[in-house]
Image (cartoon, rainbow, N blue to C red):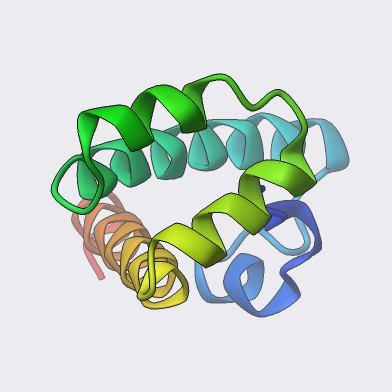
Length: 100
């Protein structure tokens, strides 16, 4: 659902666009996992228990995306906010690590 690997703007912003592919793949997988966890938390306030059960039964990624677009009117904004938060967290930690 989150195509971080192909989001050059995001990868450049967090400083890993030119990282070796194996390193980038591990970082991207971690970012996508974190984004999914944050999405679950955000959705918990937006959908009913019945909707959560319905969504949980969807196994196809495109169907899941379509369901979210239909049932969560501000889904795109939620995702935008999640990635802004992740980017800011990464940049803040990076600055602390390198002393920038």
